[in-house]
Image (cartoon, rainbow over all chains, first blue to last red; front, side, top):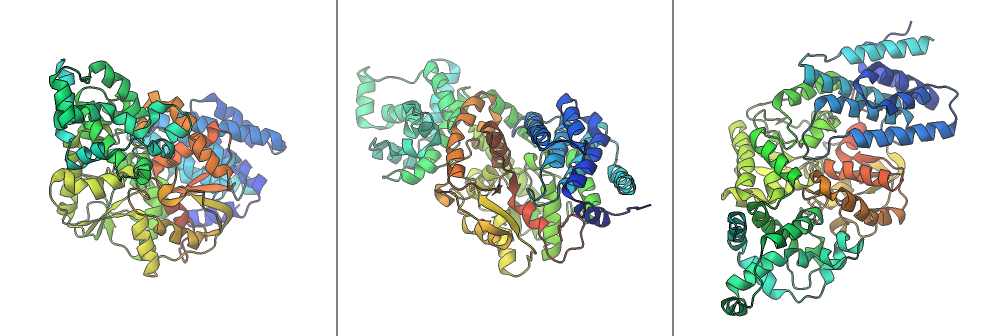
Length: 150
Length: 426
């Protein structure tokens, strides 16, 4: 079984995946934190992202929805922030990353999605006061291991 | 005259200094400033002519400080500023002006209209004519230390998690560090990757730095709303932290108005020079590049363009530095027409973004940015202001344009050479 214990190896493994594989594993990262986002559009988006047979049109539509949700969820400059809502923003951002075609961002979609999912958990930890540093990354290592071994 | 109107008029009189008086007396009513303002060009409504937005202030100047104005006032022939007038002008001064300063660039007699709008907001705020969003942001900045209500435990959580992700320490309250890094609340809340990017870059370049737990906020709502006392108080907090930590320089982050506030307005607000330097993050990164301490690997192959944040490029003079840095990263860089000091504003600066009432107009005038982008068809936009970044994303979404908006600092961190850190692309 493939195992990960650090982000350097984790990122290398993610970057080695092809575009479809990156999308599929990124969708699993998002599924792991989807409870943090109250916007139902993201659940629909992730259903498309995790479908290995999704058509190009479906993926384009899902990306548009993910992006629109991200804009609806972000905290505007100067307004009072709510960290629970901010967690939802990062989940939406992770979903957007999952569906963004390879090469459109400096970092790969799966890595970007993983980072945004961790930020969602950080936002929730700010609300709860619990120190959850590192827990999401360990879950992501497990998700990637299972994905590679499936 | 109501008490609030009286306070407003008094504040107008207070802010009419020699530059403001000479600007009003110099104006030749040519209207060139209108064509430099995206709120006018995209709506063609004369009320959005920049100099017209200053009419209440001009009226007070004329009545109080000009011969003919005083005479007409004495004869009862002048039109006094009223509460109704200020109510009408509130939207012109706060919703349809980002204080981007493009109008000041084209004025043939050299009037700094953005400076005058900044001054006029003092009277508007004093008379109770400021938008609710900006009032709330200012109250939070004073009471909590952040316009978005970001408290120290939240920053500490972001730091802890960033350290975990990048495997590098993020120094806090380190006395004697060379640089004190400020952050905008937007970065802490919406773009925490910025903190990790800085840590990776500074680790490679061997920069000694710290964040202050007592004054981490870079933004200054006092300047945006137009209350100099509050603006000075917010600057003092940073000065006090910088002096306590004995830093040599303070770094203004990827935030336009923060740079204007701390670098250019700050010493005047507190009435004394700083004991430290202030640099924008792009100035520092370009210095590090020049010294050979910033090394990158690989280039972005997509077609990139750079959006100049008004307060950093036009008002701040940081124009060549981002281009030097982009030269390290971009294989296919293309300038927008009218880039650099004459770039068009994103439409959300100067407090417009925190003013929900202005949303419809803000997105309408984004059409100007769309035209700039349509002329060059980039694959992605890079910028160096979190507020510009989020508004560019919003505007692109509104106009159905598909291109990511990236942070220059974060993109550099993605391309750091020789880094074993997990966050780097190599």
